[in-house]
Amino acid sequence: MGDEVQQHNEGDMISVLIGVLIIVVVGAICFWAIDKFATDSRLANLLKLLVVLVCLGAILQRVLPLTY
Image 1 (cartoon, rainbow, N blue to C red):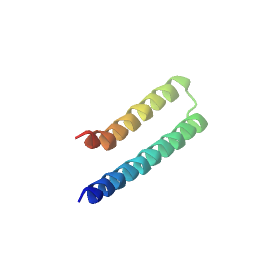
Image 2 (cartoon, rainbow, N blue to C red; image 1 turned 120 degrees about the horizontal axis):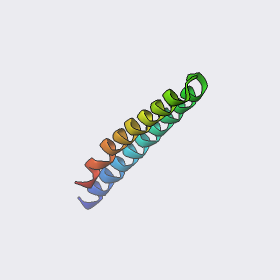
Image 3 (cartoon, rainbow, N blue to C red; image 1 turned 135 degrees about the vertical axis):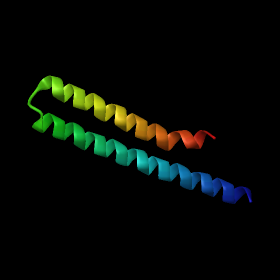
């Protein structure tokens, strides 16, 4: 029974890791698109800040359930 719980936890950790990596890649693509297409530097900085906050929120949403 202990092995099943450990395998379940490892599966959850791998799933969370893959999810976090996907979030980071999507955030990086958004940063690239903002750099390429935003002409106003203030707007670009605000959009980048928004991307960072959304990505951090998504990562926390994935990671926090593992703490219980």
